[in-house]
Length: 350
Image (cartoon, rainbow, N blue to C red; front, side, top):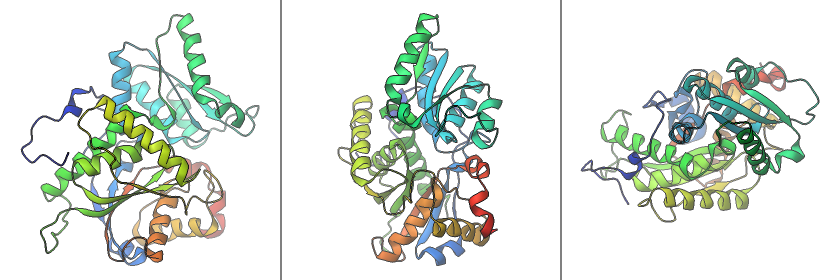
């Protein structure tokens, strides 16, 4: 289904939303980055969806927490790495909505005390209960949270489990809505994007980081539904292309079940060539790139998600995988607190 210029009712609007994000987020262009990357780079500032809770997760949480409230739940459980942006956004959003929040955070050694830095500090500010779990326990995170939810029910609570990254069919609808927002910005001329010679007002590529697949699924569905871009390129920050291709397709199928009428098999490509040595670990070249971007443009990226993704975009243009001079929309998904929690790897660069 393509963008409907008549403005007829969108079935996605039948789903309740908790209005958490500051929308629409701006789309900007910085000429200095065009020159560095070799493309016409437009940046969707989803790092501006809010204050301390900002980032791409807030769009997913608008739908997920609205469902929790509609189901009369009082406690939200979710999970992530120690410096999880998703966990922090969930904790702050729950505090705003009067919901209790339980976070299962992955640590190399759960016996160590929690650091009061970055996202963890904000989790504590929000009053979230933090349960430290090992890497081995995290592999069974869904079962672990389901068991915890059953325990809460026995004590009279009404729990609601949000999966890692808010990445399920319902959460992905947040980025279908985000692509509708982009379409409206293009139609209203809010981005100053000039029409090409054939009158086309679309991007050639939408590029973004991927750590759990929900944003990718929503962007793919929304870009196809609202005719926002020809291609979607998803830059994996962990795992690999095969893993995320299957994961994203599964979330797309779930989203289509929840919201009939979404496109069938929307195109996307997972690029895992910039994922670095491990999740939350960037290469020296990637860290230098992050500093160069900040000094050239004032745009701050993080080494877990956005830094790897924009670096991956630059490399894809250099390899010829993305056409030189292509019009690209880069989704800035946030991540500043996590960057500030671990400044040591940047010491030699600043």
